[in-house]
Image 1 (cartoon, rainbow, N blue to C red):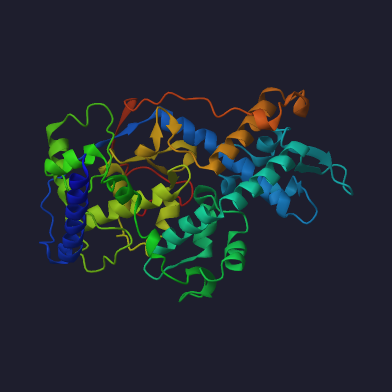
Image 2: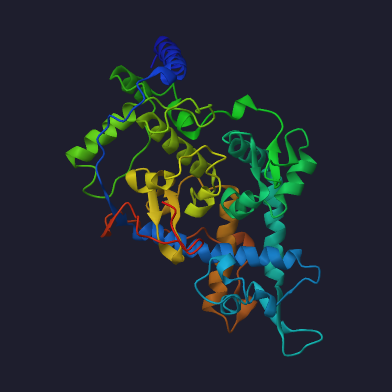
Length: 422
């Protein structure tokens, strides 16, 4: 592509974006797209990833709890009611005993019959390495948290809604104190209208107000991008990967083609003027959920965590149906007695695309977990040097595993809530 073509493409894209932003409030805002009712398809590859990471997350949360403890250990009694909180399907005491390479069991100093657990030397080394990863990626942390707050209506989120997302967003255990202390010009703890403590964004960083979808489509130097523009595909399109059979259906293809042609509303724009019952609002909701999942380290989170942010993100009451309505963009997993939403484009052949440095460190943590599970009798002695721990093994992903008889997963239940508000 020559310089003239690059310049022309960039100029026309800029004009198109401005025109869409200016005119979308004046569009005919009603539903005209005929939607197809799709059945849920199980993906064993993504389900396996979610299953593995559930145990990894629980082990990391236990590690953080031991680090926070003033005595440096946890008693078996204190772990009694933590199973649901950790998202485990087995009792916490049984779980923690599986991994002697991370957690060392010993009798209580005063009550000999009471088991206690502290971190092994290897676990302490891993924790110190994790703190270094956080320090080395502070600018990325500030950007990710800023973008989450920028998507909200008042640029703030209650801490009680952010704390469950620490693992997914890659936040340090004491992120609220750390961010407000080290970046006082960016973040502040304030009281919300409901009296809850909230993390508030002080200033609007314009350089962050670009969504991941816009970044993917804003490669004006790409010859492919120029060819797409010449074919009339100027609108931003969501990447889609359908289970086998869906993408080839004429009705589904026609529906998705019409959906992709709708103007893209950035999640960082004020959308309160859009008719909440219009197709345009539905695409805006898809865009917000796509952006939020893109900001998570593993491109996934629990559905209930998103429900907790519904009002802040200006989402409709029944927004969770979007996940099964657009199976080419999202995958809804029912593993581990809960419901997890994943971004399909975040994984390729069963592996995370563009892994964050923190996820690579967690791979090292998981390797130590597996080693302890397999060689429990030999414990820490069989561990290799931590610097030589390999990346996680590749897991083949298959999309066309099993078609369930439920429509839009309306009959599923969440372990976190016991009922589905949808």
